[in-house]
Length: 356
Ligand code: NDP
Image 1 (tube, protein in one colour):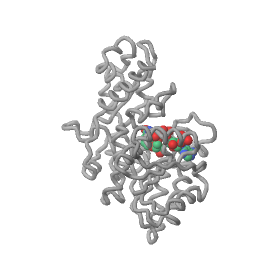
Image 2: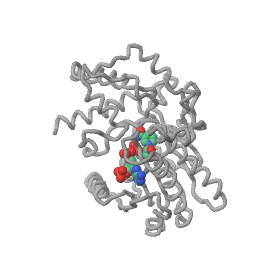
Image 3: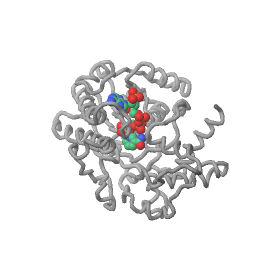
């Protein structure tokens, strides 16, 4: 079965590719440049010599018809995973509209239109949305579930890069649900939105660690490792919910195998099935990362910060309440606990540093 993955060189997408290729799917991955594509192709050829992976260049996903050529080239495509989007909190050139809103919303419209027009065999579309489209910053005490929608508007968000990112993710998911309604009589595919909060975990390939700064979310563990006992860090920021990249990757594959996941929003969080945790394990801040690092890597004691937050329970209690029973029930996944995710991320970085 052929599956198209947009933005296939991203942190999360590389894990998705790994799951798909090891499950025997024939993956067609899109990237923005040849050199990025070559790296992905070579890395998987080494890891899974039997894997069927083709790379296609789509240099600007916001153009109408940007994906038409790919859809025409693979008329028997059965699944589409739309993952490409800019995830950062403002380190980019250009206005917030150019950086976040347009790629997210126009990119989504573009792929959906191509699928509708040319993807007559497409059965499944999965979009990497975000907890950004669920969360209500004005009311973190609200019980956030698969049904919750962020009330944010573009007008309110547009002047701040982080809010602009958040709003762009919500609006991109809205584009899809509205598209499904508008084209209800023509659409033949099932649509699933995956709405992860902060995604942490190891990089799929070592080269993901080669630069000093990692992708936006993984950099949280990396920067905690770069801290010193004297570092002045606000250990309560950033804060939010978290989940493991390997679980997020599985959630992108499951709708391809399970029709019941069509029409759903999936909301993965760390430790969702932990006994008695009552939905607390996914609430995190930098202090909590430092606590795991100091407890699990004794060799880091005296080298990295211990953090300054005295009562982290109080700080964590202010973070979004949530309940993801529906996602647990629908997917049957065992969501990795926060500690495992931080441990695995840090171990990979430390091993890499020791070897280079
Ligand atoms: P990465 O930055 O590692 O990957 C982003 C991918 O999207 C890359 O392939 C990148 O291509 C591509 N991309 C970025 N901007 C554009 C653009 N303007 N046009 C076309 N392609 C673009 O991020 P992640 O793997 O973390 O994120 C992947 C998806 O997951 C995104 O949709 C993000 O919003 C979502 N997400 C991420 C979370 C996280 O904590 N990491 C949490 C929730 C959702 P290139 O390399 O060429 O820039």
